[in-house]
Amino acid sequence: MAQNSQGIQTLLEAEKEASKIVAKSRQYRVQRLKDARTEASKEIEALKAQKTREFQDFEKQFAGDSDESVIKAQAHTEQALIDINTAFAKNKEAVIQNLLAAIVKCEPTVHANVRPAKST
Image (tube, rainbow, N blue to C red; front, side, top):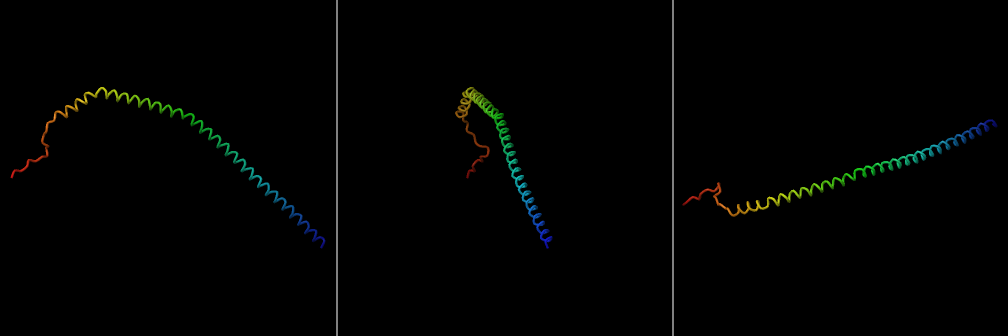
């Protein structure tokens, strides 16, 4: 019986040792997961910062172009207004004379679709 209890004792010690190994393995796995999460969040933050910098550089690069485009559009608009005002001043009198002539020179005519009234 002593040998039986010694075998049981050996098995209990082996079970305790195995449970310690399993616990250590679980703790190691949990620690590796935490480290992986930490490393991934660091990489995400670094990538986010890099993309933010790239976007800001892109924005700075092309922000000047939009201001330049606005200035060009304003200059073009001002030139078009000057041309329109010049054409208006040049043709104003001729248009007024044509309108007055058309109003004063009125020749009444019968419309082509008018039928003569039947006399009874």
